[in-house]
Structure formats: C-alpha cells, structure tokens
Image (tube, rainbow, N blue to C red; front, top):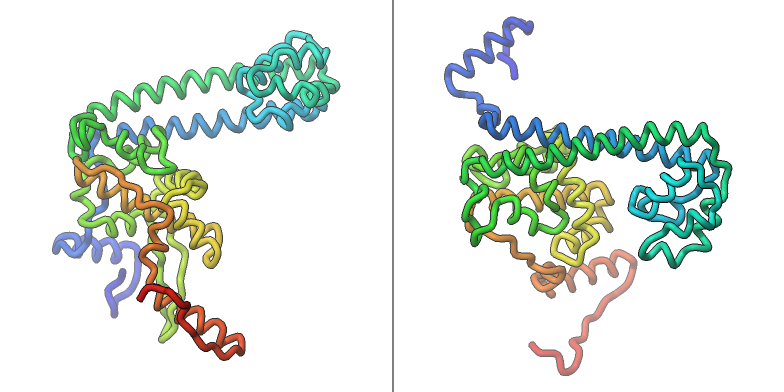
Length: 338
C-alpha cells in the first residue's frame, strides 16, 4: 500500500501506515487472547516433538535396513507391541529369526514365514548401540508428548465457553468433541484448530472471512482483461497443516467431504482438491464454533448427485459429444416419469 506521488522509503511508508491506522482505515490483525496464545504454545510444541519423534523412528528403520533387517516390509508399525519386542530382543543379543518371529502378536502371528525372512540379517553390536540411543530418545519424546497432551486438554477446559468450550454446548458435548465428529478430524487436530482459532468467531464476521484469513480461498490475478488463478498464499501454517492432514483422511471416507474430493480430483488434481476439502472443513468449523448448539451433520456421499440438475447435465453431455463431431438426437426413454 502506498501514497501515489510521493517518494517511497521505509520511514515514509511507516508514517503513511500510521496515519491510515489513526483514521481506522486498516483492519486489525487477529490476536487471540492470552489463554489461547498459551494453548498455541502447547500444541505447536507437541507438533514439533511429534515431528522429531518421527524423524528418529525413520533413523531406526534406516539402521535396521543397513543391518539387512526388513521388518517394515511385514509389520505395518515396527514400533508397535510386536515390532518393539523384536527390536529390544535384537539389542539384547538375540539373533535367531525364528525366536524373534515367535514374539509376534495378533495379526503378525499369521505372517511368521515372512517375519523369519525379514529378520534374517547381519545385526551387529554397533547397530544395537545406535538403536538403543534412538529408542531412548523416542521414549523420552513420547513421554513429553503425552504430558503436553494432558496440559492441552486442561488448557482447553479452562477456555471461555464462547463456542462450546468444555461446557454444555451441542447437547452437553465440548467443542473439541463436536469438531471430532467431522470426518478426518481426530482429537489432536481438533485441539490444534481450537488453539489456532480460539473459541470466539466474532473476529471473523462470516465463514468466508475465516477461509480468506486462513488463505484457503482461490486467489485471482488480473492483468488487463485476463484473469488467472493464483496460489492460495501462506496463511497460518499450523492450521493449514492440520486441515491438510484432516482433508487427506476425509478424502478416503464415504462421506460428503470424501465425495467432494473424488469429484474435484478428476479435473483439479490432488493438491487443489485437498485445498477445496480443507476449505469446506474450515467452513464447517466456523459454524460449529460460532453456534455452541450446532452439531456436524454429514450430507452423505450422494448429496451432490441428488442436487445435480438433470437438464443441465444432459446439455453438458450433448455439448461434449458435439465438440467431438457427433450429431446428437435425444429420444426420451419409454416409461420414464415426466
């Protein structure tokens, strides 16, 4: 923003912005109250610790592969009960793949043949020392993450009950529980959403204002008579990351959001379809926070098809065939209701 006809320097720009602020011509930035800011510190620290734990787990898997132990090709989670028992036994000095495979639990017990093959390698004491250090760090981070989660839950319970809070909105359900009903949003993502948005939606007059603030709206770039779409922008990286993860989960569900992704991905591509689903989720979130009595109600995967105009769809299909060089004549099917 600049003042036409004047020199442009940082000092003059600052003066110009100060004058605009004095006259109330600039919209204020969203600064949540102190309890929400402190909640943000907790959720963001938990996210950082979770990322760090994931990196350490990847290092453990890489060391196992260096030792020709391909446990991850058989076990979905090598840090589950069975996988951890086998890794701990390797560290203690057990090298017999059959003995290690006997430590499998539940579904893995049906894969003993594959486990024996995956556990046949060249695991040495050097690898044991490295993995021991990494597992200690992973366990420490897990303890810290659990502690932070408990602190986050207590902090959310203390928030003002503007949008459900910990109190009686939505039939006695807390805001976090009502957000958890949205496909793709689990308890942790619900906590992140509350931490990043707070419980007072009066700062965002409409759901579209919130979507624009979060930079989940298409941006139009106009040059002369030509308009093109642009990137959505950075926005709140912590919120966009959480909604992106939720959108990927929702895309795999047989719900309205899942159907929306499947419909858009065909012509928009994976990335844009996920952004559209994330925006839809944010619109739902705005309404749930704004109305303490609101509950999520899935419209169903068939909602779009039910509301599609048959005449318009027929016209579009005819136009597609005509562009391919066909001459189309429509004859109503016999027995079709008017």
